Image (cartoon, rainbow, N blue to C red; front, side, top):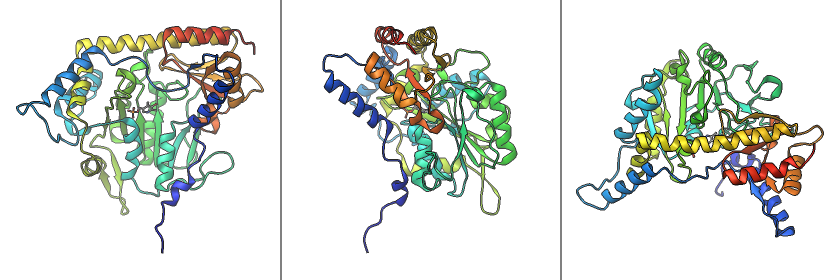
Length: 411
Ligand SMILES: *Cc1c(COP(=O)(O)O)cnc(C)c1O
């Protein structure tokens, strides 16, 4: 006998896209040591934490150093002071009522979107949009729900919902029954959104089919247009079928600080083998209290400061800054005749690569001819082939410089 590994891990595709990108960039840099490369591929913010956040963070750290104000283990679900601010500002303001025990604070939407599948059975049919944030797919591979990857770059048992220019990046309802649907809007990587009406179609589907929607709203704060839902709970009936993930990473610069939250309404049901409805909220609560000991007190204090008047003003400035970059990228690429999407309600611009140039060829072309790095769309799924992602997370100066360089190319 010998120790056995989790065989599912062997089904993961080995070549991770960002590793391949780094390898190509490093090789080019070695061969061209003088060249200054501008990176527009990474989905990470660049602006520092707001001052209001830093102030609250520092004050809370000081509190930890005095016995009168020291905090030990906190509630696994998060402190009320933060949960109540979230409910008040992010939901009540949009007419959505939530109770305190429906909001779970965590150290990231990546972990939450990755961990949530644990509370659902292994026989569920999973649907993902294509292209997709890889976390949804790979955590289901690890759990054993997907089977191996077939020739087309698709896991055999996953249902892929193509989102391309042909369907305006609006996923069509699946032709087979699906149980769990991952939706991320505004979308990473395409930067596109769903209108209220389009999202309603999905909520109705989930209600009719006893399915659950896992709704990732990490880019909610980048929405600028009116008819775009900020929360899935703006849609009638969504509280019965949707779990929503939010994060302080992209709106307030918490990518390195770590704070997020997940909303699990008490009405959301999944079914046992006798087809009895079971509430999902207590299961997630059980999962979190067993495996997680909460986010640190100073970080929750820092996150609460995002909702202060000063904090709101500062995060708006940063978002406006990134969105100005996005507008510059959009204008520059349209000017040279490229077909582009996104960048209006999100910091991502999704570029259709010119005729006859695939995602990786376009990557190599931009790297060698303009010394600009982006992300090949095919890395996010087979329907990403023929597309390319450029992010607005950069300095204004570098964004302009990169666009000047790209503008000299002709396609
Ligand atoms: C960045 C991002 C998140 C946020 O993840 P954190 O773990 O909270 O930093 C979640 N979902 C998507 C699609 C993202 O791009």
